[in-house]
Image (cartoon, rainbow, N blue to C red; front, side):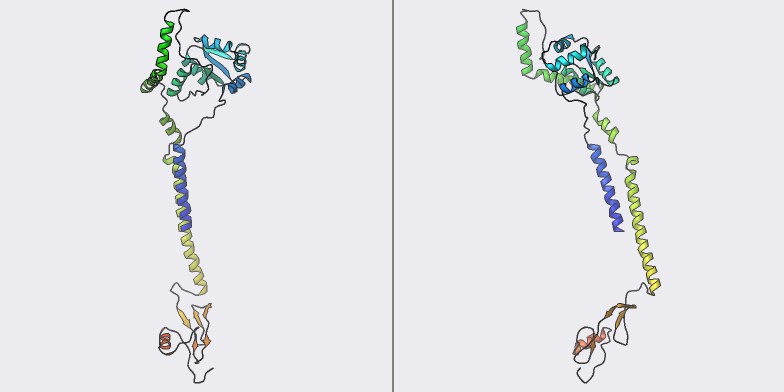
Length: 295
């Protein structure tokens, strides 16, 4: 009974522990590619198409004029093999990528990171493509170019740009505009309710049933055994026969070995003398009769 009970209890504990581990586990998304070179190979195989913002032609020109072989291969696929799509704005590009399997969006890193913060379906690769610093275009030889260059450098070095980007992300999240609600996402996937945990209770009930069944089976087998052997459920009592052999409830295998002592007493493994003999007799044992001669 205890064996079945412990088996059911351990199974119940293991089930709840496994459910809690799955509930608080962090899901890892396996990306089809992690680097720019892997992405270009996927594009060359025809598995992906490049999506870009048509309002940002400077980024397209940077890819077209690059001397790096990886960007040359990418531009060849975009221009010659026509494996590129231009959309109106980054949000349109994100919608296109969601609706069309096998698409990858190229855009400014800061804007894409902001979108990934408020949209769980957007994942940004850590490796950038042709990184550029923040800039403001001016006419060649303009008297304001040096002033604004110094101001932009000061803002970047003092961390104001990063602070403004983080404030913008917090504002977007507070407005709940396409907010990435990771709590709701995890709860929907790994919520532990009664329907999902009912298997543990079935195991517990099965363990209790097997335990009770085993207990009653032991009682029934014992009753049948005593019924066929002529025994009873009473405590075992010693019965002594006249031939000096002590038996317990008709079980000869429990007979006490007798011997003849030096003073003629028949004892159960020791020689009683004096008061010890009297006490031994009072315990319900027949030690035999004494004789005058010594054997």
